[in-house]
Amino acid sequence: MKRSLRLVLFLIVAVGMVAVAYQIADAQKKPTFPTRPIELIVCYSPGGGSGITAETMKKIVSDDKLSPQPLIITYKPGASGQVGWAYLASRKGSGQTIATATTGFTFGFVLKQSQLKPEDFTPIANMLMDTQLLVTYTNSRLKSVKDVIEASKKAPNSIKISGTSAIGPDSTVANMLEAAEGIKLNMIPFMSGGEASAAILGGHVDLAISNPNELFPQIEAGKLRPLAVFSDKRLSALKDVPTMKELGYNLQFFTHRGVLAPAGIPKHEEEWLIGLMKKITQSKGWAEYANKYMMTVQFIGGSDYAKYLAEERANISRILKSMGKIKD
Image (tube, one colour):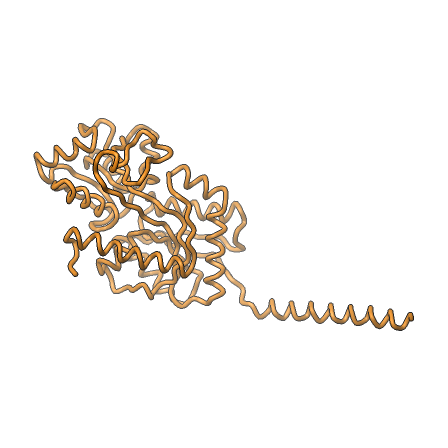
């Protein structure tokens, strides 16, 4: 009986040791990722919405200990974001470099602003949904959207409006207003939302169109006055600001904020990055960030994000064609 018991115990220990050995061997087979700090490219100048979003991501990853390696932010502005995204595409095969993505990324393909193709990237995840806000400076003679339209009709091109890039989300929203009311605004493009905001704060332009998170600090400080928002409902922190639809203009526009990696990265790196972005969107800090700047947390990962980007390209192409900005 004692021999049988010893034999059973021996077999249990042996099986356990074999199982542990297999686990160790399996762990050794799996490549380690990330092996060094992850470079997060921001394709616009510091101070804009993309930069603020990236800095928030970096802080959450560090504070919540979501990664064995930190995020290191690199700013590569230029050509409406194309400089940064071209750099990302050049890092093909490695998930150690990622980049923020906005609806401006989609405009690049629709407008053929570079030789880049959607296949040059691995969509990781959408993180937020954003909208557009129309503002003026506090002492402006323009007190409402109606004032803007009337002034533009009296003197076409007299109203200067700042935004990011010559053709992108900001200018498209301005073009939508022009088309709806038969007016002509003088669009002044800048390299980032921060520069566009600086222009209106300095009185160099009459209006600015941008994402709420880029403009809200100056609104909160009493330096800018919001006129209208291009969303389907009023913003939580700007409850006194009407939507364009409330004012009688059926104009809405939404933008996304996501993350990309280069094409050709290993599957385990793609899955790890998708998992990291999901953890970020589930964090308390991300919810607070989205709420403060009036954005909606919306995680769309991997292949679903790729489908979203394809649909966005089709929608923007349709809008620009309807306004005569691009041909069939």
